[in-house]
Length: 620
Image (cartoon, rainbow, N blue to C red; front, side):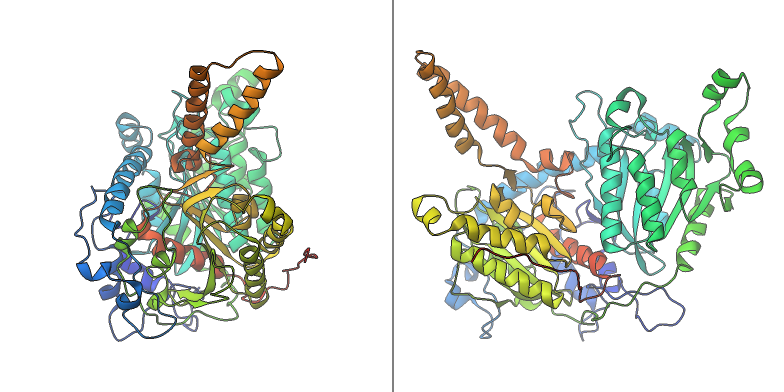
């Protein structure tokens, strides 16, 4: 892993500035995107190390000097520009303590990521290599353009879901990278994990990548090496709508919609898994290791009495020369991946976006590493979300919308790697005025075709007699309705809390953001642990009263502690990531790059102005 990049944004940082080729270049499958060649007079490489040149806490312990005393000045004197839209540093006096707390979280998350990347363990990896087979991430490295970034999604999927039956990474690697100058969606089975068989979480992760590909209209490349469905868990893998069969349904629907489907068979494709290559537009198979069959040799023996080898039953020679199931014959894995690159090179070029992002941009005025110092160690302490925006947006510039109205929500226009974005960021609990402001701004972005970036740090909408009398329910519904119907690319990052209906209004997972990430300090749930314990304790106490029993104080304290611990565990980012409630937990210092890549994927193949945004009647 390159220094300075989390597992979600591996490979060379400098590759970001060259992610997109010139759309006018002849003979290339170039795209318009939010991350373009930096044509500023200063070289791109002089910018990017400010963001990620230092050690990432995902790979090494946090080690970085703290800012000078200039950063502790008041906001009015710390600003480096007189321009009204340039954000001040906004770091507080607790930044040093904040950094220590974040370093501990990053070290913990780094250990979890390392364990997931180890796959099935050293013995399984050795067996894999002994068969002349690459590991899934090695295959992806060979497939992608040299020096280009890879955005890996949900690397912690499956963690702890099945007890001792561990499935690191869900047994599959998914993400977005650049092949022959264009962004593609990649699914790579990890045969070192349970033979590449599909557990329920494997299916969910595969379907999530297909959802991203369909939303962003990205070509799909399937690097297949799988034993098919995990038979002991077939009831949770096979029969339902969003189970194994949905993978092939999605392939058929995306192909019909003009989204290319390419399969590279590098190992087993057994039973239902055989339909991944069979449903692809083009298919490559590698000699020797690659096999495709609906029923393997043991099943054939049991059903027909026929003795046949895997190669005879479904190898490359059979399928390329006789059955016609596959289209390209590869001598080895390197050859197969080279053929896949050639296939991508000959795909029809994507539609040019109606408004390309700027070809140059200004880096933020403040180092990205300072994002590790923004969030207080005590989650109950507020912090200024503009300190985050100052380290994400080009030139640290934000043109605020309604800056003096509904001040617990910050809204405005900025850009990331030249791609314009509409920012919706929490600055406290949502009151009616903030909800109305949010609904108004989201509508503006939807009608103008501007992608939306949501930064969540919210305990929910305001409660109480005054709030209810003021119409918080209908005002919150306005914002929820606007977010649900805004048909523009949306990226959500949870930088603090994500609780209650605030999660809905701020484009939580249920509202189909194109991508959703969490910081290591983030927490997500219907409410906080202490609040939930308090509510449930009242319910339990009432049960005791109805039965004429006295609830002993020590029993109540034990009950509250148990409920608080359960809620706090379920609110943590590793718990959420294991279940694919998000697309991954990221180092705060990587946020600009991860969001930039996400916007690039979301805007590469779609028109800037959509005619699909429709809004029902708001309750004014």
